[in-house]
Image 1 (cartoon, one colour):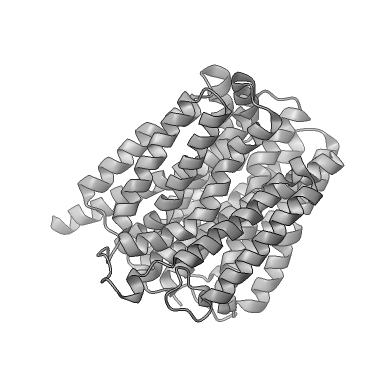
Image 2 (tube, rainbow, N blue to C red):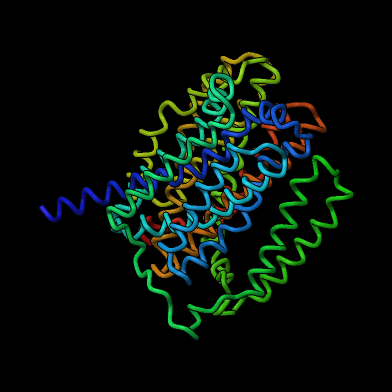
Length: 457
C-alpha cells in the first residue's frame, strides 16, 4: 500500500509539473491573438504593444539560466515557491493593468517568476522518476505544455472575443494555486535541496559573471527585438555591446570552477548540439504558433475565435504523440529522434510557405498536422539526455541552460521574423526563412553527436 501511495504521488507531482510548463508556454502564445484588443483597450502605441509580448520573452530568456544557478545555491524548492508566487501576482497584475506601464511591468515580473520556476520543475521530475522512466515523464509533461502552447491562440481569441482579454491572465491564478497545493501535499522534492556549506565553491555566487551574462544577453536580445522598430543603425551599438559582454563572460567562465554557469560544458560538442536543437525547434514552433495565426487573421481574414479553431489540426493529436515520444526517448538517442524531427519540421514550414501563396486555409491543414506531430520530439529526447548526463547537483543549472536556449530561439526568431515580414510583406518568405538556421543545426548535430550515443549515456 505504501508503494502504491508513493507511485500515486509521483503522478500527481508530474501533473503539477505539467501545469508549470503549461503556465510558462501558454503565456508565450496566448497574448499574440489578443494583442490588438489589448492595444485598443489600453491605448498602446505600436512599440508599447510590441513590448507586451517581448517583455516576457526578454526577462525569461535572460533570467532562466541564472534562476537555475540560484536554485542550486539557495535551494530549489525555496526558489520554486518564490517563482510561483511572483508568477501568480504578476498574472493578477496583467489582468488589472490600466496603462502601458502597469501591463509591461507585470509582464516583466511574470517572466522573472517563470525564470525561477522552470529549472526547479525539471529538477523535481528528475528526482521523482528513475532515469529509465524520465523520458516518459518528460513526454507527459511536454504533452501538457505543448498542448497549452498550441492552444494559446485559441484561448486568446476566444477569451478576447467572448469574455475579456484580461481573462487570459486571470486563468493563471487558479492553476498556480492548484500546483502549489499539490506540491505541498505530496511533499515533492528536488533531490539534495540542502543549502551548500558556506565558503564552498557550490555556495559561491558569481556576481561578476551574472552581471556580464545579464547585461550581455540583455543588450543582445534587446537589440534584436528593437530592429523592427529602430532599424539596424540604432540597434547595432546594443548588439555589439551585447556580443562583447557575452564574450567576456565566456572568457572568464572557462576553467573557472566558481562560475555560476559552467561554460566548460559547452566544450562538449554533443552538449552544445543538444542545446542548439531546442533553439532551432523553438524557432519553428514560434513560426506556427505566433505568425501562422497572424497570417490567418491578416490575410485569410479569420476572426480571433475562428483562428483558434483553425489551429486545432496542429494540436488535436499532440497528447498521444508526446506520450509516444516519451516512450521512444527511453529507447533511442536524441540524435536520431530530435534531428529527424527538426528535418520534418523544416519540411512542414516550407509547405506552409508554399501554401501561403495559394491563399486558402485547406492547404495549410496537413503541414500543421505534421508540425504538431514533430513538436514533442524537439524537446523530450534532448531534456532527457541532458538531465541524465549531468550530476544531480547540476540538474537546476543544466535545465536552466536548456530552457534559456529554447527561449532565446523564440525571442531571436520573433524579432528577425518581424523584420523579414516588414521588409518583404510576404508570409511565404517568412516561413521559408524559418528553415535556414534549423538546417544548419541539423548538419552540426550530425557531425557533433556520435552515432553511438544512447539515450542513457
